[in-house]
Amino acid sequence: CCCGRELFSWRLHSDIISTVEFNYSGDLLATGDKGGRVVIFQREQENKSRPHSRGEYNVYSTFQSHEPEFDYLKSLEIEEKINKIRWLPQQNAAHFLLSTNDKTIKLWKISERDKRAEGYNLKDEDGRLRDPFRITALRVPILKPMDLMVEASPRRIFANAHTYHINSISVNSDHETYLSADDLRINLWHLEITDRSFNIVDIKPANMEELTEVITAAEFHPHQCNVFVYSSSKGTIRLCDMRSSALCDRHSKFFEEPEDPSSRSFFSEIISSISDVKFSHSGRYMMTRDYLSVKVWDLNMESRPVETHQVHEYLRSKLCSLYENDCIFDKFECCWNGSDSAIMTGSYNNFFRMFDRDTRRDVTLEASRESSKPRASLKPRKVCTGGKRKKDEISVDSLDFNKKILHTAWHPADNVIAVAATNNLYIFQDKIN
Amino acid sequence: MSQKQEEENPAEETGEEKQDTQEKEGLLPERAEEAKLKAKYPSLGQKPGGSDFLMKRLQKGVWGIVSYPLSLEPKGVLGMKSVEQKYFDSGDYNMAKAKMKNKQLPSAGPDKNLVTGDHIPTPQDLPQRKSSLVTSKLAG
Image (tube, rainbow over all chains, first blue to last red; front, side, top):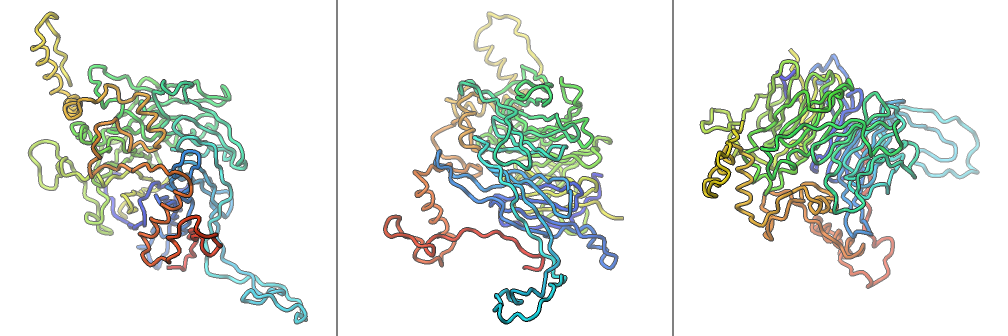
């Protein structure tokens, strides 16, 4: 699954892409950007007359999800940047997704219209009202096919429930509720009810001077609707069970890898901060991403992860400059493939890493137009850490830290991946032999 | 793998102890980086995860722009630092937004530069709200 990747397509967005998410079937791919826009791509169906277009993702719908707002109390701007998009499972012909910025979550309905009624009685074809005295006969309007139009409309707006900045949303497996998490609190919403939500986690201390950690990500379990996890800036994960109490401040499970006290440094806590947490599709495992590694945890074992994969260990000797240019605070995401046999996460220099859990092989690939030609296999990349740099290797010092791949997504069933590199969206897929 | 060097004589001279810690730092890249940082910014505090640090992060909201105060000098070019700009009130905010729009659209009309309070606005004067980009599959 790691080999034979080829570039399928890339698209230039007008703004920096801030989130990427496939829907449950993988036929739709949603991206959100810094300008508050959402672009949805749809996979083309198999077409025998054009075999090469199989599986191409083309623009399906574009809409402005969030606008910049002004917080009157704090005299600050509320950014329109889309932090997260999460799809709802499809229940009818329309598609629904949740998109959120720092403060407001919106439920969007995306529906198709391919028919138009013609032959109205009270108005003519341009829409002008007909003079009622001129109407001498009644006719039944006929539905005629029209060119497909995709419309997006906001169905619910969930606002004013977060004092701090929303970092995660997660749809529950009950398909009725979802959670939203900010730095200190997690709220539970019902998809139908916008004027109230339940607070289920509150880690704000009575005295803010005692604040030691913040919530960095949260997700519902894929099958157990009463279970969710949240990660912290101190590298810990708490699993909570909503059956135990209404307020889940006391966790059911606490996952933390013991740290060697002799290796502690100024950077230890910062690089242990978890930037993303994702359950496996099976629900048996969860994966966390910290600054330098990806860890797989067995939910049955809290003492330490079962797997640790180094993403870019060579950065450990660059932590000083990464702190100075703020890159040490970059929040990378991670994702599973459909069968949970592989995981993927991004790095710098437009590199992204894939780890095969079964074969224990990993590969570094690059998402850039210079290095990818359509239908040509991606060449694995290597970063040279030592003195002697081999041909085709890149030295750590020539990595471009402005080219960061923070957001990646994997198709729920096929070997198709979407990689966001600043304002470019790349879609890669396994070579068809 | 770091080797823990046992200090054989706890009453040893500080000079030799210093050499000891320097050797330890050399073995751990993280510690070497920490030493580098502290050499550049001697006033740096010990714990980066303190409540001051986190509280600033909560206010600014973006993890990337909150770093432990290094110096009074502005950040380097590579930093993703976004300037958190406070506005006096909503009028100040709208003026700043209008100025930004002015810079992006040099052909904008003259009424965009009106000072608030000079005249009573009419619907035609108000800046247009960005319309939703609902496009049909045929567009573009």
